[in-house]
Amino acid sequence: MSPRDESLEIPVEEELIDGTLLTPDPPAAASPGVLFVHGWGSSQEQYLGRARTVASLGCVCLVFDLRGHVRSDRRREVVSREDNLRDCLAAYDRLIEAPGVDPSAVGIVGSSYGGYLAAILTSLRAVRWLGLRAPALYEDDGWSLPKRWLHHDTDLVAFRHRAVPPEENFALRASAAFRGDVLLVESERDNVVPHQVIENYLSACVHARSLTYRVLEGADHGLSEEAWQSAYTELLLSWLNEMTAGLRGPR
Image (tube, rainbow, N blue to C red; front, top):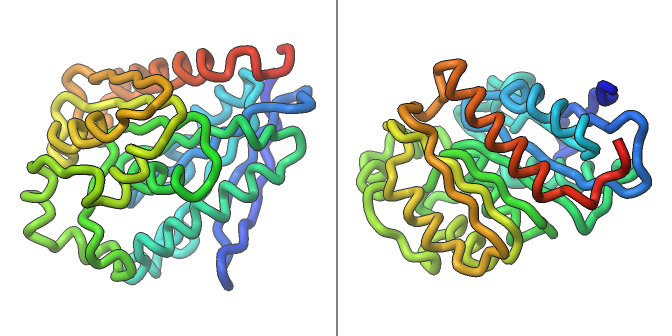
């Protein structure tokens, strides 16, 4: 049976961000929760279809728009990583408040910039599963400056091509401390997030309960072909199905 969709407005500081809560129908007494974090320049639509499928498995899912996108697109030039991490925290807190969500069984899935934020979020909230597709990586400096400025930093490309130890980076440090299950998906022909970034995340996840690493053959960063989108969806759904098996109510 199709899950139920509920449009939400989630307060963050003095602003509102839009989200969609997807609930299994019929609902279970204690369901896993999954939060999806889109990439820079995208929106909740990036994960809405996948979230519906995950909800049909018996999970409560939440997708949302980061500030600087869609409703607040006009703020894209000024929104910072600090702002967007607060968005993620607010969305996580809204998810675990949803009826039927088991707060001890929460996963976060993010792509690119969303993966970077998702990794950091694990150090601030209880997370059991972490799904990362082509997670971005940034230097810690300028954390509160407009995120857009980072795209004009000529050192960013060089930074992403070098080995970075966890102790030198917010996201990698959080990944090193994470004790849950990790899915890490790389695009074979990614010209935005090079293989070295993936290696840095792989090297950081030394304490993960399990680590699943897959490469999407021939795929680019944005998964611009339907076959690559489908391959990623299949990977993600298979992994989440395995991770949440036994924790979901009867379907």
